[in-house]
Amino acid sequence: MIAVDFGLKKIGIAQYINGIILPLAPIIRKNRNDAAKKLDDLLIAKNTKILIIGIANEEMQRRIKHFITLLKFAGEIKFVDETLSSKEAEEILQDRNNSHIMRKNGTIDSISAMIIMQRYLKSN
Image (cartoon, rainbow, N blue to C red; front, side, top):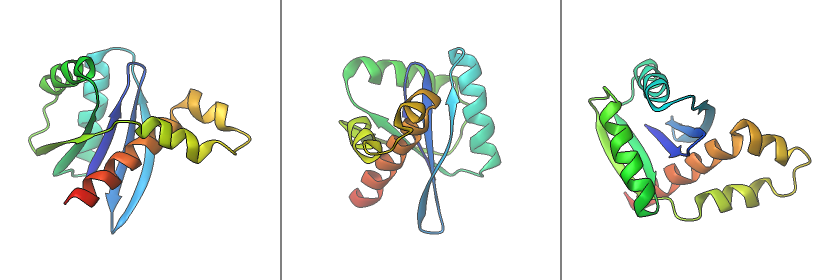
């Protein structure tokens, strides 16, 4: 399973494997098509059967649903409320000396994807 936290500049990614949630390198968005191809390639490489997508407000729902149409992914897609997941991720990193770097390089987005995965697992 792969969980994603969609952002306008970065897509945070986490993988659930052998009972552990791991953050993966985020996808830095150049444009929608490039990001969709990179996500598709990752989903294929990880042999993903279920894609967990965090959704919050209506505007992002619209953007995400359009983005999904660009994917070739044929597995199951599940949506999870991601409200405040980025804030939770920031709280996790709050006391780190390099937290500003983690925000800039997308690590925080992948930690947010981990939180989205946790929420999915708790609800199922």
